[in-house]
Image (cartoon, rainbow, N blue to C red; front, side, top):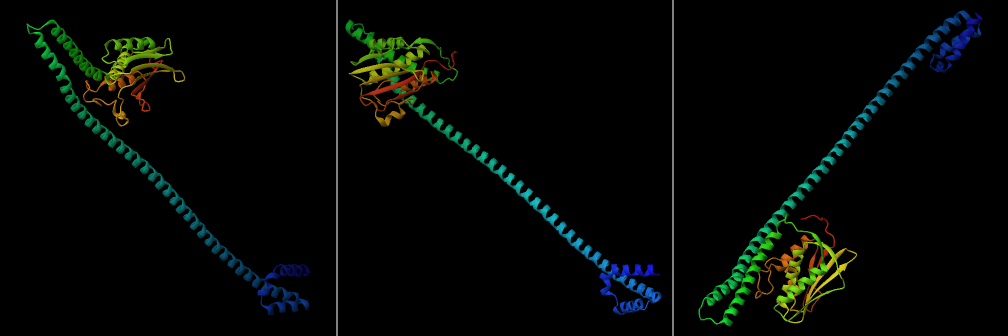
Length: 363
């Protein structure tokens, strides 16, 4: 019996935290029975107390479970909301990234399209300008040709008729022969200019590139021009070099120098015309210059002097192709030609020529 009472007291102590919810009358009754050592009734009463405590314990645990379920449901709902928000956020970020990529692609595409359109428009403008220049050059060519060729042809026709006269004296006959020869040479030069300008425009025209002495070429050209010049101006060749070997087309270089010197003789009645040759060591090229003391070229006209059919003096002979041919030859030989705008005592033309051609084969 004492063992049972001890167990009961221990069980009461264990459930003491819930005793506040047990009926106080039942507790008092149990206490009085224990003090009266009425253990039989005390056990019965304690059973009632335990039943009440079990009910209370069950109710408490049930409420805790319900609270936990509610809390879990709330947490689960919040978690679901957060997951949904994260999915929505990721979807938004992905959509924005895709939109940015598409926008960048569209911008690049339209920029490229605009560049292509601008390039096409520029090509159309260039083609239109080339067509206009071609029409203009054709008109200038026909106009110049009709004027320039008529003069020597008329001279040839007239003086040929004079030569056919039986009573013509020898002195007059020789004079007519000289004039016929002069106009024949002029006509031949006009035709050669037209042939040269057409040939030099052909991209696959070959230049015979060999090793030549530039000093020897310049000296020979000056001697040739001095022999046939029709001016009192002195033609000189100046250089500090005894020899200068370059890779060039000898015929084309001679033609280039002759064109520049003959052009200088047309506008230099007296004074001097100097062909000068120098070597530019740091650039590995030769520098040629033709300087005269003639009438010179106005600064406002210097920009177009290398254009085709450009004649600054309409009274001079030729088609206005000489300097244009010079520019084409210099370009094909790998150099650059220009006029010295700082020289005011006449005109000075300069052009460079590489000592060694980039491609040594024929071109």
